[in-house]
Length: 308
Image 1 (tube, rainbow, N blue to C red):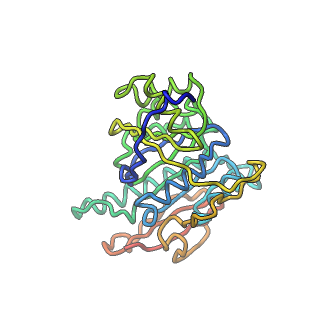
Image 2: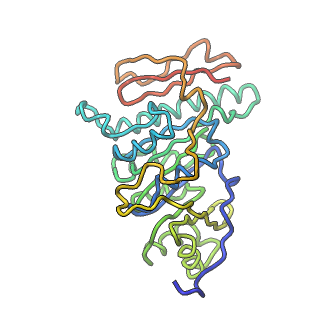
Image 3: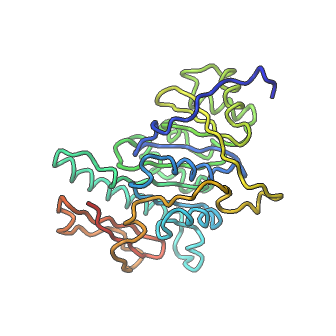
């Protein structure tokens, strides 16, 4: 790229991340979207307190997330291989609705006591390569969350290869859009129109995006503040074939575990029929000093822990 097209971009400000909202990480296959999302969560100020739940589009992606997120909370279509009567797309939506119902209950509980929802009760929901499945992305639930994402007690992270995989109504709700890899002129024009046309001209935006995505770096559009950022990729272990990249391709960067200790060492576990999704209300859940957090994996297992 000619030097005159380069623009100076400030480094990404992780303080702009919120415990709620919608985030989009956009890039073609091989743009290291999963790796980038994990790197971002390492610096996310809420990553050690909020619960993490990951919905994956394939088994390979799920295997990567199970290295930093409690395995029970990482969902994969492969979990349904021996259960053909269950459609994983419908079950993914069912799981997310169940999570938000629990968040609504938590929010109502604390609001009744004049308190905001504690960070320990927030949830980070990551949809990695799930955008490939139209049945999920076009479900009314996905549109619903984009309309009031700040009030859900949860942050949603969408990792997608192409912008058209996200329906227009959902695109309007993204608080930040992160771009990785290479984009052609048509894609750049679409990204500018959707997320940055209100505060920067297209020609200047194109120069900024091309600069921000050089050398596997990440280009960030903060749609709330009308700002652009750049985040540099740490040195990756060099291999001849990218398909053979290690799950964690950084020699000098320790790999963190996301979520509170209770998520990794939950207090109890039991099984129930898969079609029984609701969390029962309990007397303990009314105790202001404790709450029951319940999530279901694709086999019907439920992890329960108490968080003060």
